[in-house]
Image 1: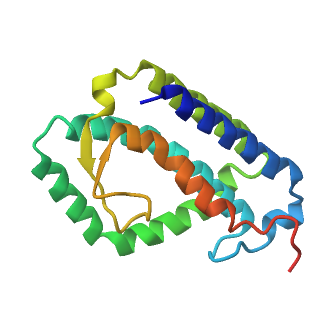
Image 2: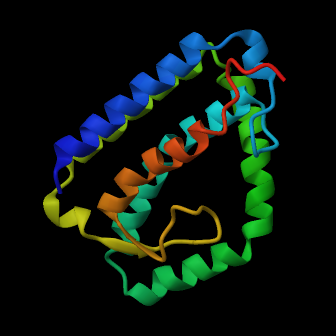
Length: 173
């Protein structure tokens, strides 16, 4: 794994996130995004949350990566069976999260999260990056059935880029 590539991608996402925040007005933030039920502000929080959730996924992959593959496969199947409640929680989580980390506070949280991910990536032994875990593929289009820890470090930016095109900043309805 070329760690520097992942560091660069994380920094680029941070710069993009700040450009989006800096160029948006309060009206932009309250406008509906394209293709979601969220406002732009809520979608931006959801994009930030994609990075936050990785901080929680890293220890899970390390743990499940030490267990027989059937354990994480069973776990992923259980989570897939809970997709409907997950979707509701995912939606309302972004609605509530945007109230706590509104657009004025999101940039700093994004920076702290990227810094934490970068520190963890730098400290990660090479052997750990190859650990694998089954994922609930119904929860996110970027979850693969089996993901390595390296894949998990790359995941949030795929998620970020996907949702970025759904923002309607600067485009009045």
